Image (cartoon, rainbow, N blue to C red; front, top):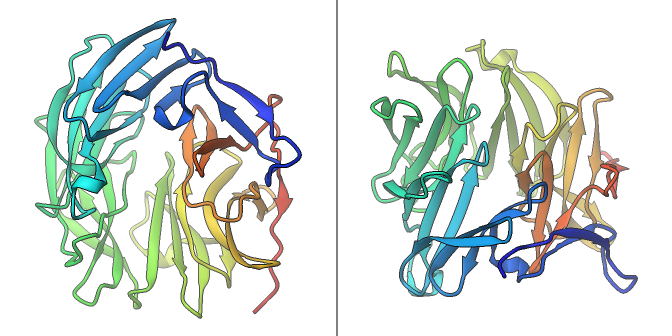
Length: 343
């Protein structure tokens, strides 16, 4: 039976974390997208098959080569972007485009829409985007009118570069690119005029940008991991064009930081950030709280590299397990103020 009963339990005393672990009746590593509220999920079934399970029933969604791996993302639990990629052990280059499908849970007919990576929805599903390593083109499409599709050329010479992409409620596409010196920049593309504009240019190839967007603002995370590491968090209104008018929210002399996450709750913005630990540099998931203008640490895993926002919660996949930040009452298990000494 493919039904998954997801529960939370405290890690036993011999574990190295105070976070709560997500468990299921089937292998947690096969989950591709899950929902605690209605016990439904997409999961990798066997070799090369993607399946959906809900209410004690399961059915196959995609099936292909035995080494295919799948990913899933959504905005409303009914319309999904699926991607299918060959096992990395069979593909010499990690910069390999996946097959991308649009899938409606009621129609149950995957529709192939293109090849690329990083498929995602924007503005509550009004748009979706993906990037092609092969063509070096960012594709943005309106979901309810797919004739309104835009191809944005990416100029980076790096075969492994994949742009950050966010779309404002005003119909402006924000994305990152690199120049000939490998310096990253923030650009915008207006879908009405089809004009692109440089908003912000970095002067060092070691500095990276991460983006997330709310209804009113674009949030920009600028960070570096060199000897002169730093982390800066800005807020930039969708109504502005002049980057000098951005608001400085958070600054740190420690980096790197990445994986900026918005829209989990209105009080905070989340990121994964380097921190000076007792035994050396570590990385944890932290948040910046708007009301008191302070940062808080929410994990104790020391080597956090990824975080997944699902159903207004954040989950951390870590060493074949998945952890959640909050307990059953919705309170942070770990909520320690981040205090850093000036370097």
